[in-house]
Length: 102
Image (cartoon, rainbow, N blue to C red; front, side, top):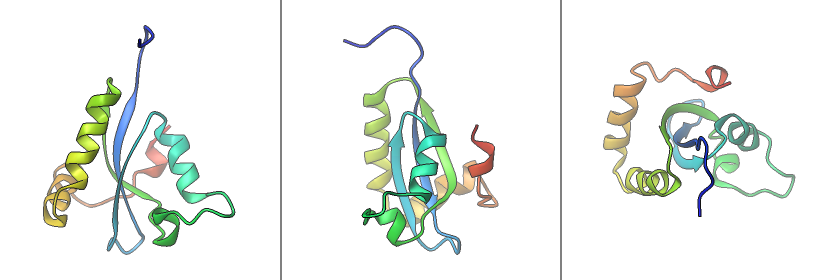
């Protein structure tokens, strides 16, 4: 049973500095998750750490975790050109949005 109150979930896309790799994820705390992508545990062998995907270029907000997870799966299943179209509509210059998340 879900508790009453506000629920916040985010589906997001990260890229590397030269924008050649895309990573799609879901979280309930975008600011904290961005921190952990950049500062993983010492033994972490994650995709984002390996490919240096630390830069936020796209996100969507949801109130329901199931909806967020389904959207993440939908985006992950897209070909790169469709993901690029999503990013271009949301963030045409592909500006890194990390500092805007507070």
